[in-house]
Image (cartoon, rainbow, N blue to C red):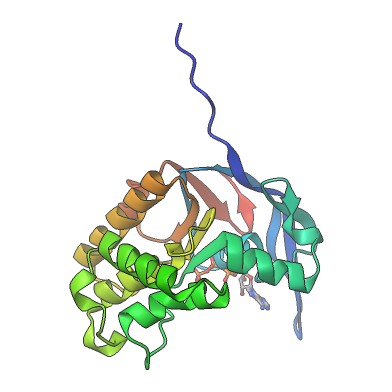
Length: 230
Ligand SMILES: Nc1ncnc2c1ncn2[C@@H]1O[C@H](COP(=O)(O)OP(=O)(O)OP(=O)(O)O)[C@@H](O)[C@H]1O
């Protein structure tokens, strides 16, 4: 008989509901979403436009607060923390990748990757070492000094991934990370994401419309009208 140790659950959402108040009345963006993500697992969230993917990712990452339900990072309930503690958890435990890359245009690739380490007040020698390692991991060692506008879209998103992972977060959240890339570049970026998640044991949640990208997922959940349907 073989026994395998189940991977540790890193991120958990229980009964997450988000209702937005608008001039035209209430919009129920997410209803009772429950999910778990283990260390080293790549979970893809798919669903049509408006199904609640961004709402879910924002709640998982502490960028928004649910109307009801909770999010747990390990044993800590993120949704029960005050603003300061949420900011600290975001800085120390979560990496974010954005559809439009979110790089600072006046900073070089290396300086962009360094930002999370500066926020954490990591000493300079260690910052340099980690930035070099992170750029190497995404295949951009030779591009450290270039500004975002001197890089292709795929290269910019690889800088975005290096930045998200440089501070060794437990959780990686990526909202449509390949949404602005052509299909060939998207495949390269998604392969890279899957590799780093598995190598580093990060719990990752990635939203996408792209059926191609589901092939890289360890698990796929589908949202429809704000509900997890599969
Ligand atoms: N701040 C807000 N105020 C009001 N309604 C909102 C707000 N944010 C999202 N919604 C609504 O909630 C629903 C879910 O939106 P969400 O952006 O999460 O969907 P999505 O699946 O990410 O869509 P897309 O794939 O187009 O990015 C939509 O009906 C949207 O209009």
